[in-house]
Length: 499
Image (cartoon, rainbow, N blue to C red):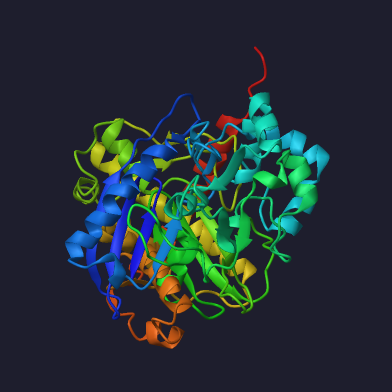
């Protein structure tokens, strides 16, 4: 089984055997572009070139022929949007990344045309800069020539899964222009219950239907590759966080996972019925097997987690490598009263405050870089705690433990801090590549490589577990101080009255 994991900062190609063991992995980072404050862009053509290098390299590393790959699973950063020319296959604009906030000024106009409560009820999504629909409206309103070309069928739209699937299966020479229900549920253009593009939402976002991909089940026939290697069936397309839920084998209602990557994403399987959140969470499609009921999830999304550590390295020079943040943070016993709110792209769940801005609160002459490093890790944990609290309020039963994955789970101090502030055990599986594994599992089930989900459950093994150790009074104090810091972040981002 093979998987392409196209993430926010890098692209990876992986090969797994029947026991779910990793056989080969190739990875390469792509460029991040920040042309203006709040703008985040990727070069979709660069990402496709990476796939063209990495997939053949992964097969060479595994010492296998493409014909030995039973099926390919494709997983991706989700709300990032690509617009490209149908005939040339070239992107006509930079890809606008999910973290981008340029659509903030558009949101009030959208809400005037269709009330935000209606949008939430129909899509499960709050009206926010995070999602794809407003990004497409911004693109088409800022270049009328693109609108004309989209309406005549010259242009194609899609999230990153659609862009890669189209290229993998032929591109301008008959490529499959499709997405799956998990990715489509993140666009703010799909009705969560009919699983189809919604005419009223398309009208509000000014999106021509003919430019959009076909919506398909997550697991099923998505075409056969023609490039960069030919003849591999694509058995699954699934958004990265839904893939992680699948890779954690959280197949039953009430099971949850939390991924610590560029951002933090906690998902709770809610079964075959969508549950609309009352506490700032997103209702999303988890996955759908062709011919079977759709599985839904509640999700809490935090924009900045690992990205905060990367900011400490690249922008501040506080550390030389991401691993150093743990050593530096462990050099002090606490944060010294310092709190970091990393609202680089506003605040996502459960606040949805697009105007919030990042702050560092509690600075005194006592504070050292060790305290700042500690505050950085605590910010990741405290944001996660807010999501868990919202999830407990929405769910019938509180979560008793959380399965975790993602690059940041190698940071033991962070994982202990997460257990401390969540006040539940935190469990890390043996297989760290849960996103790619979930895509491979979904593709394998689609073609019968694995007989059923119970086979996959038996392949899940615990690697580490952390239990709460903090004094309850200290936890309560941290949560109270964090709430104050959040209030300051929101207030700082609001327009100031003229002097």
